[in-house]
Image (cartoon, rainbow, N blue to C red; front, side, top):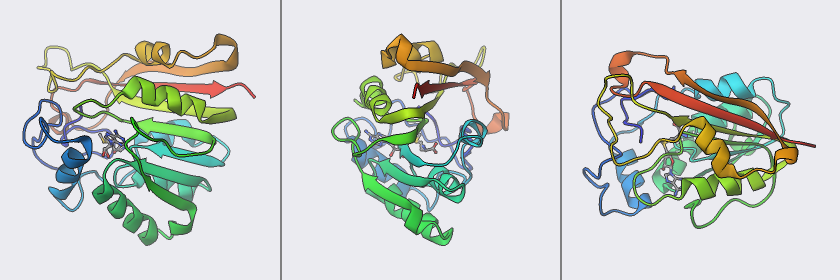
Length: 232
Ligand SMILES: C[S@@+](CC[C@H](N)C(=O)[O-])C[C@H]1O[C@@H](n2cnc3c(N)ncnc32)[C@H](O)[C@@H]1O
């Protein structure tokens, strides 16, 4: 699980809170309680910038309908809307969603983004999408990530793209900052999607060293990217 001090490009400018080992509200709280509490810790917990993996992988896609899973404070959704996408942003945390809606309004994008509250293990936005993005959809507790990502794949329209960005392993020699959370490799994420081979094209399935300030991301060495396209 990311710490707020890791960098997933919404990099984090604050301390050493831990999402992953049950500290604070994490252990007994529901997912919503955990994340609402996490978001209430400060006015903004992410950088406000879109994730660089999204910018890199979505910049050349023709805008259509996009779904942002675990949209947090909305920076990715706002960026997509600014590129001409109609966006549905969804998150478990009403606190995050209210903030995201405020950022969308500030950016003049309110009419291009619909925010919906879902615990994605329980319910999922309706419709099909030309891009479904799950950027750092990690959480302590019982979030069924693999199943959610399979549902995400099912929501991709013919010709559309599923983008999954996640944290990978710790830096060599570093202590794992989230020993209770398993961070799958991109190959494991791909296998977990159980995609029919003839129906999908794998565009990116790669682990890469995280860029950013080392001091901002203790222990995390790698992120990974999976980008698959449903054949039209
Ligand atoms: C690590 S944050 C990533 C936020 C954003 N995508 C980003 O890259 O900055 C994980 C997000 O997933 C949301 N989340 C966690 N569990 C969820 C669930 N079961 N359903 C929907 N969203 C969830 C959290 O509220 C949080 O905003």
